[in-house]
Amino acid sequence: MAISRPILGLIALIILAGGIVLQFFVILSGVVETSPVGNTYFLQTTTNGISGSREFGNPTRWTFLALCGEENGRNGNCRGSQAALPFDPPRNFGTEQNIPEKFMNTTKFFYLSRFMWAFYIIALFFAVVAFFTSVLALCFRLGAYLTGLNVGIALFFQALTASLMTAWTVIGRNAFRSAGQEARIGTYAYGFTWGAFACFLIATVLFCVGGSVGKNEPSRNAKKSYFGRKRSTRSRGSFIDNESQRRVKDEYE
Image (cartoon, rainbow, N blue to C red):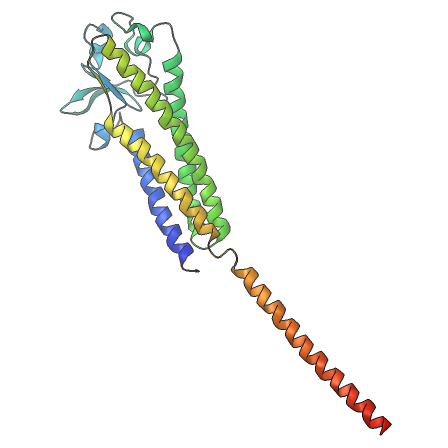
């Protein structure tokens, strides 16, 4: 059982590292053009009739850090890189001309995308913290539980960000399609985001299982040593009692 904890911890560490890598594939989209990051975007749509979209190209892609065009199947001509880039077509394109009605006079999509961005960073932070504390999980039960807690927090925020991403991209795609545009969601962004969620879920379970390994072993040893002392004490007591009886018997004789 002593070997099981390091093995479980090592497997969980590898899976956790894989989830962090998947997160970076999404977070770096819009600033890195090489594959697979260059193929990663949340939503792509044609922008026929939308004058403000000429700066980015037709079609236009929403990535994590920038609005981009499409060049040879990858993100290209990315402009306006910024943190917490919102999905808000009137604001993004600087016009309301030919923008689908669903995006007009509402801040719903703005906040859905902004909170998704924030939760992504929070999930990454706790995942990295868990990665460094996972060294303790290889040796100590408390370290395994502590790492499992950090990964569990990362899992929670990753679930939130994945849900928000799914919400605004699906609604946005349908709205653009209803307006006669050709829109689609990014399969790479979906795969990496939900893949990171799955990695954190598995890692959380493995770290917690690793912490429970060998949990009852000390109590068994203590129980054995207790009864061992009790038996030896009885043996010494019986010897003393027999010796006293022999002395009394000799005196009377």
